[in-house]
Amino acid sequence: MRRRRNRRGAIAIAISLCVGELAAAPRLAEAHPLHTTLVQLTYDEHAHVLEGSIRVFAGDFAAAVAKHRGAPIPDDDRVTDAAAFAYVSSTLRFTDTTRRPVALQWCGSRRAGDVLWLCVCAARSAPPTALELSDQMLCELFDDQINIVQAVSGEKHASTLFTKGDGAKRAM
Image (cartoon, rainbow, N blue to C red):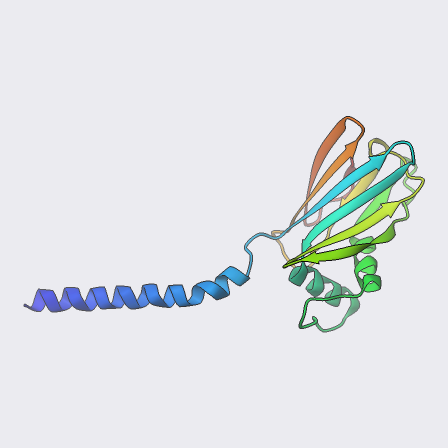
């Protein structure tokens, strides 16, 4: 009889722990475990334009922009285009073969749920094969940040991986 009570007590404790874990699940689901950005670079060989599409989690991006500006994190994870571009251009940098910076221009953003798609471009740019880049977006927030850059120029495709503290690397 005593064993049954102990078993029932152990089962009750196990069930309550599981219920507690399930109750916490929505909060855990809100926090994504991956700290990544994805930059997709496309080079138009005829127009000599390099376009970058950047995918980033809105909450992480808003926190990074706020930190960069020395401002509080907005409640709705929204940032102005000017603040977004200032942050992107300070953390995603391109240089040509002579080590001169390649000027980026802002071409907009759109939000899809918790994800932001940011657009930057460089007119009269050299092809990615002649560029180096550095991507340190969100590295000031997360030690495990991983930034992936995929570049396409004609038939050439390349992927480059950046982690916190990485210097410039060949774009392609």
